[in-house]
Image (cartoon, rainbow, N blue to C red; front, top):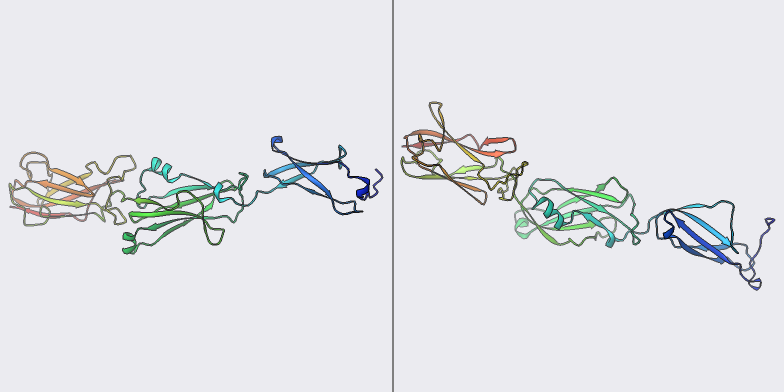
Length: 326
């Protein structure tokens, strides 16, 4: 009462202490312990083990009387990172459901949330992650190397975001690592899963046409001829039937236009009788290749212009090809 030291003496018996830590949610309150520092000392050691990060009231009682005139507020930091508590979105399964098979050159993102063993957000600013895609043996033999994408901090303290995209189509093994530790630690159940990246929509500068029906001098009137259009995306991958345009239309639908020009400046399409003897041109699409069959009808020399559909409309492959029809 008068501010004098009251040393602890075991012979006198111990006072009754109560230590309580009360966070925002009283249901998360915990109790601590108090022990004398030493015989003949007026100091006592208070020990508590918080499990909820944030701010909490620290209340201390001795013989049912509160110690101190004010209740101190203590800040509780999160515990150590628990890699088993890390969650991320989308998972590979959710990714495929939402976006389908990843397309070459398209950028995607993964959001990672970190926690300690008590599910408190882990907020260390130094925490980082890397997403790595190891190419298959077939791709490696072509010189394709492992692709690594590193994280940046998100809007919340325990959030990291990885932007990723692969330009070379083929199979890769995916791995997500926490990079603060040495060596890097694998942190997710998708580690080691194989994904396939497919070719994207066609590029007019990379696509090409070939075959007897589009090279000059060898198309015979009234005999069916053909040529092929090889679809490649802007990265040189064969266009996949799984690729889609921004409007949702599939590349597997006929998305090709054939324009025929004679050297008098007149333009036709292959389905007009100037160049085709009855019926439409047959266009067959499979595995990034259009095969175009047509029957010349009127002799003459023509330039065949092959156009492919891009996001901005039909664009011509190369500069057109001359096909002389006899």
